[in-house]
Image 1: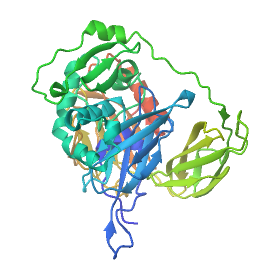
Image 2: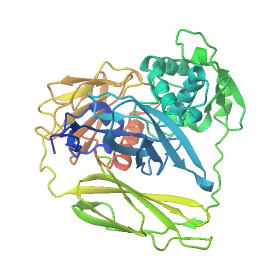
Image 3: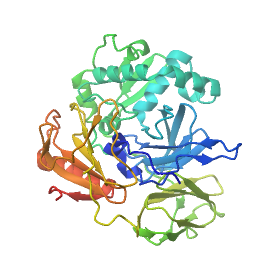
Length: 465
């Protein structure tokens, strides 16, 4: 196993919890005349205005499963841009399919790709506009998908995102890429996730519709205008948008005859290496006949292990977050899905780690949408030093100095979120350009919950010594 490349801090801003320290090999023999191949890790959030829990996420023939927060990890050989799909199990045995786009960059072996109604609507709109067929029909043809991924380039994507911001203002609050900017599947902490709870974006032959939860079309945006940021448009009525936000989403009542009962041992968290198993033999259906099962275990680096017996056993060696899901199917084809998020630590975690003396990465220039953070890694750790990057709305720069425990770019220090396991510490500061209407205490509490509950990390309101 070769050493890990330097950590890309853009991914840590919203999805550091999906990455683990040095669990991926940069190159491995594929058995074809000694040729070296490269494995790429995709991480992101699946969401529909709620977390896309246990969604099946696929890029071509490679598939994985999201955890209960909608966060997925997927490892595989990548050679070109591709559609990425998420099938989200709903109540009532229905499935919601959403699409997004992976842009292949050979030098970037970890990519953040979110999957949500905005990414699906934009891709469907482009397919109808340029290829004269829906995204669902286009997906059935390899030639059509290649035309779509080639034609929907970054410039057209960014134009559409700017037009959406103008069209849906003020509920589309800031400059934001639904594809590649950090996304939290929580309407209380992410305005885009909240928008998806109240406004449905749906491509039709005549344009992109914005619909409320009662099914009323608020307005239609012509495709020619959507993909031309120089074209003028009329923003949706703020009165109509406010009224749409008063209509709650209807949650279907489950009528699934299957009840999944499982026993997982050992319980999470645990220390690796360990033999772990899940027993679902007590599961049952109101329909007569035996159930069949499909287990999926996603390792911290995105590798997938499958199983089909009632007793699923696997040896876990790498520390980090694991996702286990099981799909039960009865003799009439009814399906039910459930799972567990597992956290594994290791006996050889760095003792008394030293963060940041060899440098850090900070967000600059600051924008009203950027997270005001500074990232430091363990000096001499396997993740290496920070590397500057640009996600569109958030840019980072390298600094030879440690992160400041006082302030950054006019924003006061809020707290730190630390993962010794992943050899990373994130310093959070207030963003003076960002008007969230939160007090510093409310902002700190929101970040604390994300750090502890979502990221499974250590939170400290006092500057580290």
